[in-house]
Length: 287
Ligand code: CAA
Figure 1 (cartoon, rainbow, N blue to C red):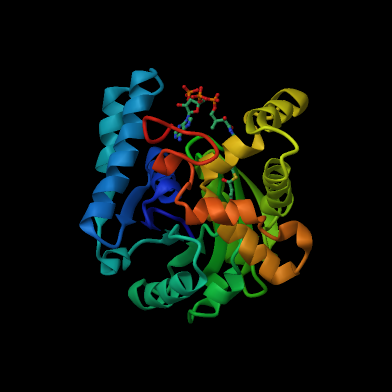
Figure 2: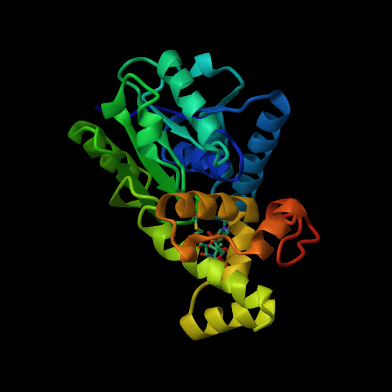
């Protein structure tokens, strides 16, 4: 099966990046949000990213216009009826995603592949909400999606060989590298990343090091592009908490348990760059 038209559901931080990546690769993209104001905010985010690429000399004005013309915003799920692949990127809430997959199953043509960008929720649970379990998979992008070269392809017990080979060809067409993971909590990357991020919060919470020293130690001692607290601000502390909770729920291992400081920061609304403050402050609102 060849993918020509892609639907993206949820045009927040990750969804907007995925829309941009697909449109840049030449796909027609239907971008769906639940209301006009969220849709406008998502499209603004994409346009700002394209403008930045033009300003940096990475994209011509003409290419920018062509990319923008391939993106069609909507609030109607029915507008996804004839896409070949849907990528779901709504918030990390199991009930919300299960309900959405049942609705997508009803709205989309029978041959449409349904993918989730979930970081840690069960892809199998989403497949089970549909009548097309062999056409459901995970396509897990990394933040910022236009820059990060990896996509985890997540396979459930029901995902067909044909679905996987279509997904591999699709990921390659985006110029990204795929790795294959079974539907196990956290897949490959978050299984490794989340305990490390939570340990950084514990170091800070227990007063063992300052936020600057934790981040500097990892940046300069391990040559990571950013330290763990800066990275959590980029991912979003609410997203980190949701991932940790769902991994702890499945594994019941202390290393996945969210430390109290993380929970309190989320309760306090310190969600990271997207709201202007997290472990650090971002006076311009985002970065
Ligand atoms: N959207 C689009 N492009 C962006 C961007 C964004 N949000 N942020 C940066 N870029 C682009 C810049 O425009 C620039 O492009 P050019 O080279 O073409 O000019 C390039 O990325 C480098 O950016 P900068 O020079 O501004 O900054 P940098 O060199 O410090 O890189 C970074 C920024 C790419 C974010 C880098 O710091 C990095 O790789 N950080 C780690 C990110 C990471 O680990 N992401 C994974 C998070 S885990 C996850 O997403 C999964 C999950 O389930 C939680």
